[in-house]
Image (tube, rainbow, N blue to C red; front, side, top):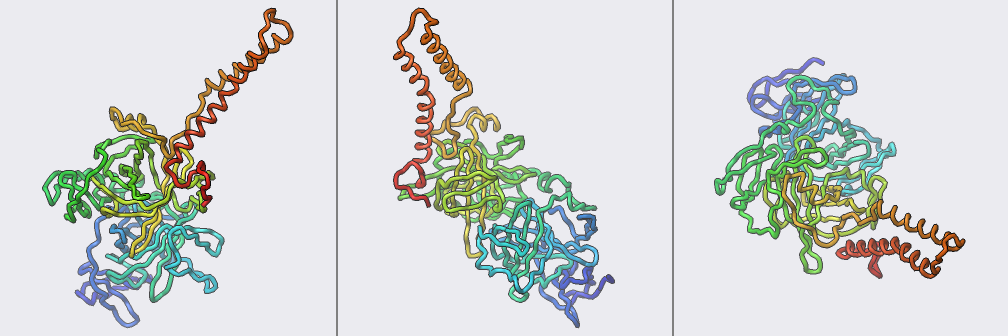
Amino acid sequence: MKKRVANCPACGGPVEFQLSTALVTVCEFCHTVVARTDKRLEDHGKVADLVETNSPVKRGQMGTFEKKEFEVVGQVQYQHPAGGVWDEWYLKFPADRVRWLAYAQGKFYLTTEKRLSESTPLPAFESLTPGHRFQLPDGKTLVVAESGIATARSAGGDIPWAFRPNAEHRFVDLHGPDREFATIEYDETSGPRLFLGHEVALDELGLKGDSWEADAPTWANTAALQVNCPQCAGPLTLHAPDQTLRVCCPNCKSLLDCQQGKLEYLQTLQMKSKERLLIPLGSVGRLNDVEYTVIGFMERYVVEDGKKYSWTEYLLCNPTIGFRWLVRSRGHWSFVEPVPVSSVNEFPDHVIYQGQQFRIFDRGTAYVGYVIGEFYWRVTMGEQVASVDYIAPPRMISLEKTTSDAGSELNISLGTYIEKDVLAAAFGLKELPAAWGVGAIQPAPRLGDDIVVLWIGFIVLLIVLDLLFSTGSVTQPVSQFHFLVAMAAVSAWPLIALFQNRQFEVRRWQVSDFSPYQQGESDA
C-alpha cells in the first residue's frame, strides 16, 4: 500500500496513514485525533497523554505470529470502570489485515473480528451478565467474566475505527476452555462486534526491537519505590508501583490514590483492626516454589442475623505471575489464587471444578472493614461484593461478583488449606497463633497407615489364636467369650474413627446455613 501523507487540520504538521483501513490517526505533534473522510481530514479533538504502563509492546515494532509478520501500527488506552487502564494495540498483517492485541493485568489477548450472519445476532449488552454462558455458532461455549462501560482515554498511531476522546466504550469479556477469549464491543452507530481469539504468551508474538524481556513483565524489574505520604510526609514503600491504584498510609491511615507512584490524598480512614498484622508488610516468603512479597492487608466481614463475622486477607505480589492472597479465618490459613471463570460449572447447591464437586458452604455480602498497604484496584471502605463459597476440603471455590453503574465483574478463586507451621517457615516467622474450632476446609483427621496395619495385625492374631484354641492345639483354652470381647474391641476401632470423623464434619458445618447435618435442611 502507498502510505498517505497529509497535513494535520489542527497544527498543519504532517500526518501519515500507514494502514489502508485506518479511519483515524493521531498527530504526533499536537495529539489531535485526525479522521479521514471521502473529501478531507477532520479534527476530532485532542487526546490526553498516554499513561506510562511500562508496556512490553511499542508502536513501530515488528513481530511474527503463526509464521506471519506484523507491525504494531496503533494503540488505544482505555480507562477501566474500576479506575485502572489497559492497553490495546493494532497489529498490521499482510494484505492490511488487522488483529487486536490487548494487555491487562499481566496477560495478553490476541483477537480477530469475527463477522456473524444476520441469522445469528449477538445478544443485547444488558443480557450478558457475569456467569452467563454464550454459545458461538461453531458450538463453543464462552462464559461472561465482565461487562462494563470504559472510557476511550488516549491513543496513538493508526486506528481502524472512529476513535473519539472520552467516548464511552461498552464491552463484554468472555473466557472459554484452552485459553479462549472473546470481547463483544457495543457501538451505538455500528452495532455489536465480536472479536474472538486466545490468551497468548509474549514469546509467541516474536517481537523485535525495543521490547521487554520475554519471560517477565516490565514491572518485574521495577524496584520498590520510596515515596512520602502527601498528608503526613511519612515514608511509604510501593512494592508494585506500576500496578498499585490505592495505598493506605500505615502512619496516618490516609487513603491515597496512586497512578504510577504519584499519590493523591483522598480521605483519612477512621478504622481499627480487630487483628494485629501477623505477617508484616514487605515480608518475603516462598510458597509452592514461588517467591512472594506481602504488599497489602485487609479485614473483611459479613453480617448474619445482626452478628458480624470477620476474616483477614494478605495480598501477595510476584512480578511474574501477579497477585495471590493468604486468607485467615478463625486462625485457619488458606492460599488463594484466581481460576478462569470458564473452568467452573455452577449448579444450585454445588459447583464442579477439575471434575470434583464442591458443596455450597456460605453465601452473603462481604464488606471491607479495614485496609493497609497497596492494592491493585481502587479499594474503598465499605466496599461490598456478593460472594458464594463452595468447599471440598482441603480446597474452596469462591465466586465474587461486583456490580456498579459502570458494569459488573465475576472473579473466581481457588483456596487451598495451608498449615500455620508451613506458612511461618515460608516467611521466616517464629510462630503463628493457634487456630480455634474446625476450619471450613481444614483436612479431616485420618487414621495413620501404621495404626491401620496394627489394627489388621490384631485381627489376624485373634483369628489365629481362636483357631488354635478351637482345635485344641493350645493345652490351656481360653473362654470363647473373651475372644468375642477382644474381637469386638478391636473391630470397634474403625467405628470409633468414623464417629469421630462425623463429629469433625458436624463441627465444620455448624457455622454454615447449608449444613448436611441439620434436620430439615433445604437442598437449595
